[in-house]
Image (cartoon, rainbow over all chains, first blue to last red; front, top):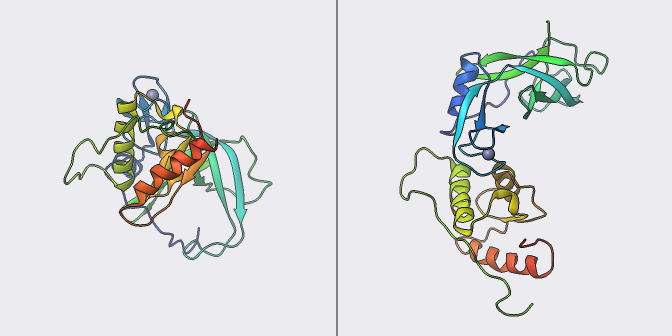
Length: 136
Length: 100
Ligand SMILES: [Zn+2]
């Protein structure tokens, strides 16, 4: 996205592992050691069963396009071109809101269920996880 | 509603008191909520109503893994949580959320 000056997240103690992972080029999820469920966004307990016995692991970075909307009125900091705000389903199960990069931001190019791969873009001290069409 | 037909069955604070640098604001809410759930012998999925102040009750619900039928975000200062108890009793009595 040209002229991208979007607001950036401030890592918290519970999300630091995720943002450190992004900086290291690794998409980190968490899973419950009790019920085995993966979840996102990060938190120090399992949202399925409430257990605090959870662990961090590196996800595959594979996902599929679940849904999106093309925003033709970008807010300040998001450039001036239309861009897709997407929800992807990670191979491990959780869904994540993100942008699709290295692709035209059009319905013709963005097909639902299309396979995607994570890619990280650095914005100073923060790296954001985006997704690109698999094989690109 | 008959007197005594709604009860507080679990109550808790954060696991530790004082400075808790390992938890964010939403994490403090969740820590206390999980402790209250444990006190009541319940799991997040048993809950269908959430009231809180200082954070958005829907955000707290989703963070805890709860899809709420009823939320209350009344914020009137330090006594907000007293109003939440009263609103929760009214919500249960009127059937907006359940206890089973
Ligand atoms: Zn679990």
